[in-house]
Image (cartoon, rainbow, N blue to C red; front, side, top):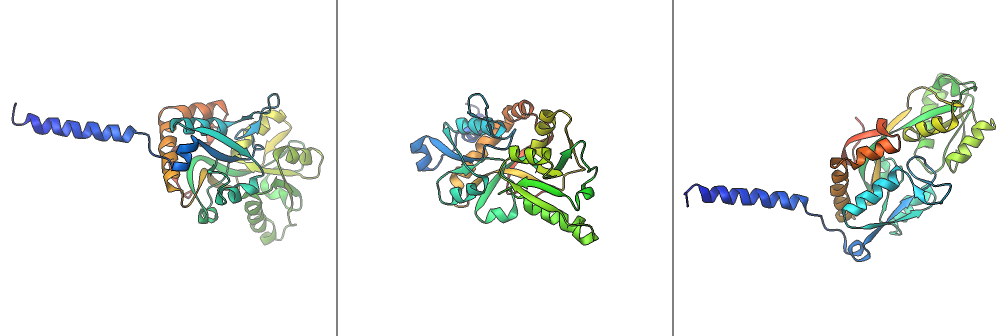
Length: 278
Protein backbone atom coordinates (compact mmCIF):
# COMPACT_ATOMS: atom_id res chain seq x y z
CA UNK A 1 0.00 0.00 0.00
CA UNK A 2 1.25 3.48 -0.83
CA UNK A 3 2.90 5.15 2.17
CA UNK A 4 0.59 8.17 1.90
CA UNK A 5 -2.59 6.15 1.54
CA UNK A 6 -2.84 4.89 5.12
CA UNK A 7 -2.83 8.39 6.68
CA UNK A 8 -5.39 9.51 4.13
CA UNK A 9 -7.65 6.56 4.90
CA UNK A 10 -7.30 7.15 8.63
CA UNK A 11 -8.12 10.82 8.15
CA UNK A 12 -11.19 9.96 6.05
CA UNK A 13 -12.34 7.45 8.67
CA UNK A 14 -11.94 10.08 11.40
CA UNK A 15 -14.06 12.65 9.59
CA UNK A 16 -16.64 10.05 8.61
CA UNK A 17 -16.91 9.05 12.25
CA UNK A 18 -17.18 12.67 13.35
CA UNK A 19 -20.00 13.29 10.86
CA UNK A 20 -21.78 10.18 12.04
CA UNK A 21 -21.48 11.26 15.67
CA UNK A 22 -22.79 14.71 14.80
CA UNK A 23 -25.91 13.07 13.34
CA UNK A 24 -26.45 10.72 16.26
CA UNK A 25 -29.51 11.34 18.39
CA UNK A 26 -28.39 12.76 21.76
CA UNK A 27 -29.31 11.15 25.05
CA UNK A 28 -32.27 12.37 27.09
CA UNK A 29 -32.64 12.09 30.88
CA UNK A 30 -33.46 8.60 32.17
CA UNK A 31 -36.94 9.64 33.29
CA UNK A 32 -37.74 10.79 29.75
CA UNK A 33 -36.17 7.74 28.11
CA UNK A 34 -38.19 5.44 30.37
CA UNK A 35 -41.49 7.24 29.81
CA UNK A 36 -40.73 7.75 26.08
CA UNK A 37 -42.53 11.07 26.24
CA UNK A 38 -42.17 14.65 27.41
CA UNK A 39 -44.79 16.60 29.36
CA UNK A 40 -45.15 20.08 27.88
CA UNK A 41 -46.96 22.97 29.60
CA UNK A 42 -49.23 24.94 27.28
CA UNK A 43 -51.98 27.55 27.59
CA UNK A 44 -54.41 26.94 24.74
CA UNK A 45 -55.65 30.50 24.39
CA UNK A 46 -53.07 32.11 22.14
CA UNK A 47 -53.84 31.59 18.43
CA UNK A 48 -52.09 30.79 16.16
CA UNK A 49 -49.50 29.46 18.61
CA UNK A 50 -51.81 27.14 20.58
CA UNK A 51 -55.58 26.80 20.66
CA UNK A 52 -58.43 24.28 20.70
CA UNK A 53 -59.98 23.13 17.45
CA UNK A 54 -63.63 24.27 17.76
CA UNK A 55 -64.87 21.04 16.17
CA UNK A 56 -62.69 18.38 17.81
CA UNK A 57 -61.43 20.30 20.89
CA UNK A 58 -57.96 18.96 20.03
CA UNK A 59 -54.91 21.16 20.58
CA UNK A 60 -53.68 22.77 17.36
CA UNK A 61 -51.28 25.58 16.45
CA UNK A 62 -47.70 26.40 15.53
CA UNK A 63 -46.22 25.38 18.89
CA UNK A 64 -48.19 22.13 18.88
CA UNK A 65 -46.99 21.15 15.40
CA UNK A 66 -43.40 22.19 16.03
CA UNK A 67 -43.26 20.66 19.50
CA UNK A 68 -44.55 17.33 18.19
CA UNK A 69 -41.98 17.39 15.37
CA UNK A 70 -39.10 18.18 17.76
CA UNK A 71 -40.10 15.39 20.13
CA UNK A 72 -40.43 12.93 17.24
CA UNK A 73 -36.88 13.80 16.15
CA UNK A 74 -35.80 12.53 19.58
CA UNK A 75 -37.98 9.42 19.31
CA UNK A 76 -40.43 10.76 21.90
CA UNK A 77 -44.14 11.41 22.15
CA UNK A 78 -45.68 14.52 23.68
CA UNK A 79 -48.14 14.99 26.53
CA UNK A 80 -49.48 18.53 26.38
CA UNK A 81 -50.58 19.82 29.80
CA UNK A 82 -53.06 22.66 29.26
CA UNK A 83 -53.41 25.19 32.07
CA UNK A 84 -53.29 28.85 33.07
CA UNK A 85 -50.34 30.78 31.65
CA UNK A 86 -49.28 32.13 35.06
CA UNK A 87 -49.04 28.56 36.43
CA UNK A 88 -46.66 27.24 33.78
CA UNK A 89 -43.35 28.28 35.39
CA UNK A 90 -44.46 26.99 38.83
CA UNK A 91 -45.40 23.70 37.13
CA UNK A 92 -41.95 23.55 35.52
CA UNK A 93 -40.08 24.32 38.75
CA UNK A 94 -42.12 21.74 40.70
CA UNK A 95 -41.44 19.13 37.97
CA UNK A 96 -45.08 18.60 37.07
CA UNK A 97 -43.98 19.24 33.47
CA UNK A 98 -40.65 18.77 31.68
CA UNK A 99 -40.70 21.98 29.64
CA UNK A 100 -42.85 24.90 28.52
CA UNK A 101 -43.69 25.59 24.88
CA UNK A 102 -46.50 28.10 24.82
CA UNK A 103 -45.63 31.47 23.34
CA UNK A 104 -43.53 32.34 26.39
CA UNK A 105 -41.02 35.17 26.08
CA UNK A 106 -37.35 34.65 26.95
CA UNK A 107 -36.92 37.40 29.54
CA UNK A 108 -33.83 37.99 31.72
CA UNK A 109 -35.90 37.84 34.92
CA UNK A 110 -37.25 34.41 33.93
CA UNK A 111 -33.74 33.00 33.49
CA UNK A 112 -33.32 32.77 37.26
CA UNK A 113 -35.45 29.63 37.10
CA UNK A 114 -35.37 28.57 33.44
CA UNK A 115 -33.19 28.32 30.34
CA UNK A 116 -34.73 29.17 26.98
CA UNK A 117 -34.17 27.83 23.47
CA UNK A 118 -35.15 30.86 21.37
CA UNK A 119 -37.02 30.02 18.16
CA UNK A 120 -39.34 32.91 17.23
CA UNK A 121 -39.29 36.70 17.14
CA UNK A 122 -41.99 38.43 19.14
CA UNK A 123 -43.18 41.87 20.11
CA UNK A 124 -45.86 43.61 22.17
CA UNK A 125 -48.36 45.24 19.83
CA UNK A 126 -51.28 47.61 20.46
CA UNK A 127 -54.40 47.10 18.34
CA UNK A 128 -57.89 48.60 18.44
CA UNK A 129 -61.30 48.79 16.81
CA UNK A 130 -61.10 50.42 13.37
CA UNK A 131 -63.92 52.82 14.24
CA UNK A 132 -62.44 53.68 17.65
CA UNK A 133 -60.72 56.86 18.87
CA UNK A 134 -57.11 55.71 18.48
CA UNK A 135 -54.80 56.38 15.54
CA UNK A 136 -51.36 56.33 17.22
CA UNK A 137 -50.04 54.76 20.45
CA UNK A 138 -49.95 58.02 22.41
CA UNK A 139 -53.71 58.40 21.84
CA UNK A 140 -54.15 55.59 24.35
CA UNK A 141 -53.29 57.89 27.26
CA UNK A 142 -56.47 58.50 29.26
CA UNK A 143 -58.15 55.42 27.80
CA UNK A 144 -58.31 51.74 28.78
CA UNK A 145 -56.31 48.82 27.38
CA UNK A 146 -56.91 45.11 27.86
CA UNK A 147 -53.90 42.79 28.20
CA UNK A 148 -53.36 39.11 29.00
CA UNK A 149 -52.93 38.11 32.64
CA UNK A 150 -49.82 36.13 33.57
CA UNK A 151 -47.73 37.25 30.59
CA UNK A 152 -44.92 39.81 30.47
CA UNK A 153 -47.16 42.21 28.55
CA UNK A 154 -48.81 43.97 31.53
CA UNK A 155 -45.40 45.06 32.85
CA UNK A 156 -44.28 46.10 29.36
CA UNK A 157 -47.48 48.11 28.91
CA UNK A 158 -47.11 49.79 32.33
CA UNK A 159 -43.51 50.77 31.52
CA UNK A 160 -44.58 52.17 28.17
CA UNK A 161 -47.52 54.06 29.74
CA UNK A 162 -45.26 55.66 32.35
CA UNK A 163 -42.83 56.89 29.69
CA UNK A 164 -45.51 57.95 27.19
CA UNK A 165 -48.36 59.20 29.40
CA UNK A 166 -47.26 59.88 33.00
CA UNK A 167 -43.84 61.38 32.25
CA UNK A 168 -45.36 63.70 29.65
CA UNK A 169 -48.19 64.99 31.82
CA UNK A 170 -50.89 63.13 29.88
CA UNK A 171 -53.86 61.34 31.47
CA UNK A 172 -52.91 57.91 32.86
CA UNK A 173 -53.67 54.64 31.10
CA UNK A 174 -56.15 52.23 32.69
CA UNK A 175 -55.44 48.50 32.31
CA UNK A 176 -57.80 45.51 32.33
CA UNK A 177 -56.21 42.07 32.87
CA UNK A 178 -57.92 39.36 30.83
CA UNK A 179 -57.47 35.59 31.00
CA UNK A 180 -57.58 34.91 27.25
CA UNK A 181 -57.89 36.46 23.82
CA UNK A 182 -61.62 35.80 23.55
CA UNK A 183 -62.30 37.83 26.67
CA UNK A 184 -60.06 40.59 25.34
CA UNK A 185 -61.97 40.82 22.05
CA UNK A 186 -65.30 40.99 23.92
CA UNK A 187 -64.02 43.88 26.07
CA UNK A 188 -62.99 45.75 22.93
CA UNK A 189 -66.27 45.16 21.09
CA UNK A 190 -68.37 46.11 24.12
CA UNK A 191 -66.38 49.30 24.71
CA UNK A 192 -64.92 48.41 28.11
CA UNK A 193 -61.48 48.89 26.55
CA UNK A 194 -60.36 51.07 23.65
CA UNK A 195 -57.29 48.97 22.81
CA UNK A 196 -55.94 45.48 23.19
CA UNK A 197 -52.34 44.44 23.65
CA UNK A 198 -51.11 41.16 22.24
CA UNK A 199 -47.90 39.48 21.13
CA UNK A 200 -47.00 40.37 17.56
CA UNK A 201 -47.26 36.79 16.31
CA UNK A 202 -50.97 36.61 17.15
CA UNK A 203 -51.99 39.91 15.58
CA UNK A 204 -52.30 38.78 11.94
CA UNK A 205 -54.80 36.10 12.94
CA UNK A 206 -56.86 38.64 14.91
CA UNK A 207 -56.97 41.07 11.98
CA UNK A 208 -57.89 38.31 9.54
CA UNK A 209 -60.61 36.88 11.78
CA UNK A 210 -62.18 40.26 12.53
CA UNK A 211 -62.32 41.22 8.82
CA UNK A 212 -61.58 44.94 8.97
CA UNK A 213 -63.04 45.58 12.42
CA UNK A 214 -59.57 45.78 14.04
CA UNK A 215 -56.41 47.70 13.15
CA UNK A 216 -52.81 47.98 14.35
CA UNK A 217 -51.83 51.06 16.38
CA UNK A 218 -48.24 52.01 15.59
CA UNK A 219 -45.17 49.78 15.90
CA UNK A 220 -44.55 47.17 18.64
CA UNK A 221 -43.88 48.82 22.00
CA UNK A 222 -41.48 46.04 23.02
CA UNK A 223 -39.44 43.41 21.13
CA UNK A 224 -38.36 40.03 22.49
CA UNK A 225 -37.87 36.38 21.50
CA UNK A 226 -40.05 33.41 22.28
CA UNK A 227 -38.38 30.36 23.79
CA UNK A 228 -38.87 26.79 24.92
CA UNK A 229 -38.30 26.84 28.69
CA UNK A 230 -36.40 24.20 30.70
CA UNK A 231 -35.42 23.95 34.36
CA UNK A 232 -31.93 25.35 34.97
CA UNK A 233 -30.63 21.97 36.15
CA UNK A 234 -32.21 20.01 33.27
CA UNK A 235 -29.35 20.68 30.85
CA UNK A 236 -29.37 17.19 29.30
CA UNK A 237 -32.96 17.61 28.12
CA UNK A 238 -32.33 21.22 27.05
CA UNK A 239 -29.31 20.23 24.95
CA UNK A 240 -31.15 17.30 23.38
CA UNK A 241 -34.01 19.60 22.40
CA UNK A 242 -31.57 22.19 21.07
CA UNK A 243 -30.12 19.52 18.75
CA UNK A 244 -33.62 18.54 17.61
CA UNK A 245 -34.76 22.15 17.11
CA UNK A 246 -31.75 22.79 14.87
CA UNK A 247 -32.67 19.70 12.84
CA UNK A 248 -36.20 21.07 12.30
CA UNK A 249 -34.75 24.39 11.13
CA UNK A 250 -32.37 22.63 8.75
CA UNK A 251 -34.84 20.15 7.22
CA UNK A 252 -37.43 22.81 6.31
CA UNK A 253 -40.05 21.83 8.90
CA UNK A 254 -39.77 25.17 10.72
CA UNK A 255 -40.24 27.21 7.53
CA UNK A 256 -43.23 25.11 6.42
CA UNK A 257 -44.95 25.58 9.76
CA UNK A 258 -44.35 29.34 9.67
CA UNK A 259 -46.13 29.39 6.29
CA UNK A 260 -48.96 27.17 7.54
CA UNK A 261 -49.71 29.35 10.57
CA UNK A 262 -49.02 32.74 8.88
CA UNK A 263 -46.00 33.55 11.04
CA UNK A 264 -43.32 34.26 8.44
CA UNK A 265 -42.73 37.80 9.74
CA UNK A 266 -41.78 36.27 13.11
CA UNK A 267 -39.16 33.91 11.60
CA UNK A 268 -36.01 33.43 13.68
CA UNK A 269 -32.77 32.80 11.73
CA UNK A 270 -31.30 30.01 13.85
CA UNK A 271 -32.07 28.68 17.35
CA UNK A 272 -30.16 30.22 20.26
CA UNK A 273 -30.09 29.85 24.03
CA UNK A 274 -30.91 32.75 26.40
CA UNK A 275 -30.30 35.45 23.80
CA UNK A 276 -31.17 39.11 24.34
CA UNK A 277 -32.50 41.24 21.45
CA UNK A 278 -29.82 43.56 20.08
